[in-house]
Image (cartoon, one colour):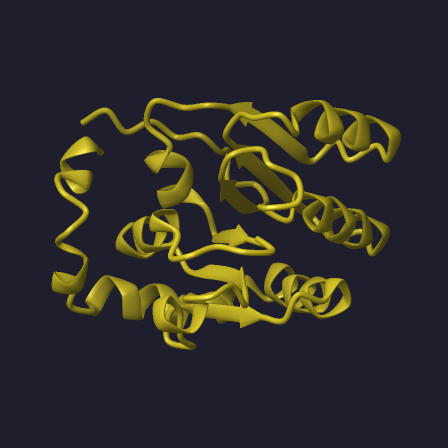
Length: 178
């Protein structure tokens, strides 16, 4: 197995896997939410896996706001360990069709929090995650609750482990990659 441990698990680990496209993927919202969580003194680490034209904006925003718990990992040949070991997968996009990465996270038994993009409610229901309005305060409040009470995600994780994943068989060979 190629699995490695990307996190030390001393904190609540959040992962976002996406192209670093600031508006499309809502990375400006991600930065604002992280800033608010840090103002509240919450203990978490947030890993952003991917590369793109928004990297300079992210690096500058992280530096200016001292967001030392936000990590830009760059592209990974195999992002799945980051998804599998995370406590929560988050995607705050302003628009999406049906992002494969959300299905991948669910296959890896990692609950998700996503914004209300087009197919969000088809992909995610309250057995496996959260679909949030595109509202910084509501997203911040939900993440604050989850980070503070991470055991509240246990039932979603258990559901994902137990549920029938046949509907995901189109993601060919993904599990072999791990």
